[in-house]
Amino acid sequence: MKTNLLPHKTFICCVLSLSLLLNGLAQNSTSPFKVIGFYTAKNDPAHISYVQEANKWLAKAAVDNHFVYDSTNNWDNMNARFLAQYQVVLFLDTRPDSPAQRTAFQQYMEQDGAWIGFHFAGFALTPSAFPQNWDWYHNQFLGCGEYKGNTWRPTAAVLRVEDGKHPFTKHLPATFKSAPNEWYSWQKDLRKNPAIKILLSIDSTSFPLGTGPKQHEIWHSGYYPVAWTNTRYRMLYVNMGHNDIDYENKTNKELSFTFANETQNRFILDALLWLGRSKTAVIKNN
Image 1: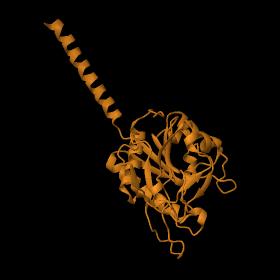
Image 2 (image 1 turned 90 degrees about the horizontal axis):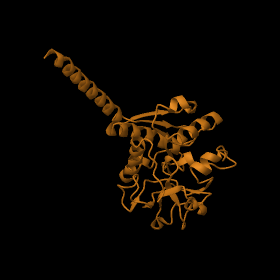
Image 3 (image 1 turned 120 degrees about the horizontal axis):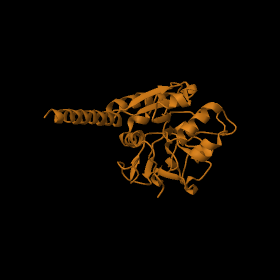
């Protein structure tokens, strides 16, 4: 009898150890993912208003959906050691400018990092304070090249869902009305890039889009993508991120808010949750 007792205790200990190990692994697999939002929030009141709003909305979304959200305006944090803490990186309004910051971000994305960029994060115009001097980012990663033009004033648009089966768009109707925004056009035709999957575009029922007074800032026709992913990376660019501001009367009063639109919010949140939880998954083009 005594000779059977020790193996029996050993078996129980092994079972308990295995149970604790599996429980630890389960806790690790369900631990909240971490998101870091980089921003600048200087100069343009419309962009500053949007960034402040975005940080508040993302902080609440993190609590409601069980992930961690941090934000920083220190772009020197764009380094390998800092980025290793986070599963998703956001560019809320601008982009990194130093060679070291740019190299760190490219390596992060090439090593299965995830990213969402908003509105001005895609902007590049030569000559300007934000010239197109980062070919990997603007031509390969985003695929759109330089900024070409925009609508004015910020107005809502009817957006068309180009792929309703994509994880980012699966909860969206075929078309929906956006929050007011300044809409960008681009140098390159994204439809000709096999790596790019366009998810949202301006629906033709939106035209004329913009109110002027400059006529070239009112769109009457054409194809304008406003949200897309590059299927070689875990990423999403969305053109939204410019609140309407009362510039004319010099009050700088906020006249619209980007995150006041529940359907648009659902799209952004679904993308964020998928990128944060999917780890290394990449969605290929059909």
